[in-house]
Each structure stands twice: as C-alpha cells, then as structure tokens.
Amino acid sequence: MAKEVKSVDYGLEKIFEGAQDFLPLLGTDYVEFYVGNAKQSAHFYKTAFGFQSHAYKGLETGSRDSVSYVLKQDKIRLVLTTPLNSKSPVNDHIVKHGDGVKVIALWVDDARKSYEETTKRGAQSYMEPTVEKDEFGEVVRAGIYTYGETVHMFVERKNYTGTFMPGFQKWESDYNPEPVGLKYIDHMVGNVGWGQMNTWVKWYEDVMGFVNFLSFDDKQIHTEYSALMSKVMSNGNGRIKFPINEPAKAAKKSQIEEYLDFYEDSGVQHIAVATDDIIKTVAQLKARGIEFLPPPPQAYYDEIPQRLGEHMEMMKEDIGELQKLSIMIDADEEGYLLQIFTKPVEDRPTLFFEIIQRMGAQGFGAGNFKALFESIEREQAKRGTL
Figure (cartoon, rainbow, N blue to C red):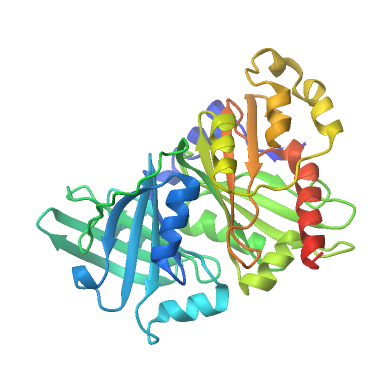
C-alpha cells in the first residue's frame, strides 16, 4: 500500500490547520501554454476538447509582442500564447521545450501577500506584484518560479468584473463546439530530473506550505522494464494537488526519462481534468479525434470485481462499457475512481491529459499503475524510446 497521511477528510484539513494560513489558495485560476501557433492550438482545443471561446489579446488590443487566446470549459481556463516576433523570450521556451505549460496560475485573495510570503521563504521571483487596470477594475498578479522554467502566478481578481483580465477583450466566435463535460482541474503532475524529487517536495513544503500526503516508490511503480517514484503535494484545503515524479533506475528508459529527454528540462507532464460522466466524456472525445493509450488486457477487466471489493455495490458503470472505452478503475477506503489517459497532445512525447471521475476515492489510481505504465511502454516501444 502507498504511504498515506490521514485524519478527518483524508487528512488535509486537519494537517494544515496552522500551515495553510500564510498562503490560502482558492483554486486554479488558469493554465498558460506557450505554443508555436495559438490560433491553430485554440481551434484544436475547441474542436477536440470542447472548450469555448472566452477572451483574446493581440495586435487588435494593442499587444505588439504576443497573442493570447483564452478558452473556457466550466471552471477550467486555458491561455494559449504565441510570440509575434523573433525577439520574444517566449520563442526560447518553444524552441527548447516545444509547446508546453509555462504558467500554473493560482487564484488568491491577496497576490502581494502571497508573493511576499513565498519569496521570503526562498522562492525565486518571476514577476513582482503588478496591478493591471481597465474600465472593469483591476487584477493584481505576481509570480514565482517552480521546477524547470515553470511559473506559479498568484492572481487576485476580487476587484475585477471584466471577461478575463485587463489587456484582453471578449472573444466572440461563431464556432463553439459543445463542451464534453470537463469540470475543473483535479491535479497537475510535474516531472523532475534525477535526484530532484525530494528537493521539490521540500520546496513545496517550505515555500508554499503544502503537505506530502501520498508517496509511491519504485517498488510500487515499476514494470519489467522501467520504474519511477512519485510524491503528491497538496495545499491546505485540498483544492490544489501537485504530484511530482522522478525517474528510477531500471532495465530500460522510463516515461519520465523520455519526457525529460524531449522537454529538455523539468516541467508539467500531464493535466488531470475532472468529469461527472467519464463514459459520456470519453466517448465524445474519441469521436472528436482524441487518441487514448492502448487498453489494458482482458484480465484487467475480469479482475475488477475482486479489486473493488465492497465498492462494487455502489458502482454504477457497466464494466463492458468501461472496457469498450479502455477506461480504468481503482478504489481506496473512501470509494472508487475512473480514469483514462490521452496520448501526448504535442509532436514531442511530452504533455498529455488525464480524464478522471471520482466516486469518493481521493487517491490517484495506484492499483492502475502497472497496467498504465505497461500501456505507456508499448507506445514508447513504437517511438523507439523505451
């Protein structure tokens, strides 16, 4: 079993009664990608994932160095940013990493205080507190670096009533495919280099006031060929969860090593988005062209009743339907969860998405690790990177 820290409500509320005070986080505000072509990327996320047009910044709004499209689906906001000239530092990020996550923006009540509290605890500054204003009010933002070139941006928008933030205008579009049922960001996973996981675990504990409430070592996360280690960090109210992965020595190259080779640094490996009806969501995503990892073997689905135990009584989904869509299932003491992982959504085998539906379970699908990583390895073998 994975090492867990527990108390009431999975331990998070009680563990953080004191520690969470200096950095209260209200949720994920937005995730910003640096991409080679924001216009085309926006079309992809609208068409394939069901995001809606929300806001825009570019030449028409007075931005001379970059263009950004903001997409929204329920509580999820994605910002897709592309440089408009060769001198932009955004270019350097894209050349080195390919399309990827640059900013994980965190919604806070006081951006200045969030910046002050984290920088005095050792965070490296990315952007000092900055006030941005327009006719709808003001937004205060401040940023710090985390692993690699990834940034945590603190966003304070309590005095703003506009569409997104100053500098953006509402993005009107005749093309808005129906949403697929994605609700909010459940967690975001970072891959870090050899021997760096504990460094970043300590950073989140010391700088952000997070707690490590789940840990998996290479004895738990391994296959015949590869292995990795993972620790899950969470803030006090449990709204922000950041698992951190590190490669481990094994016979062949793990998925984490492949990511680091192609991303050329530590960075965001995948974004887990929640749905209330994973069967409906995944069916729609597949119909729109999203590719998922190969299915687990027949034996995996035959063993579901045994693995779920008492939770089988509350299970509403048909196992045959899950198998048809290659959806995996796991359980913990609180309930069960359903999950599935896309193939990488970039040309480089780096960023991918997880679709997850929680039916009480608070874990991360530890019972699926072996089947999942064997599926990933089959894809690595095709790419010649195993």
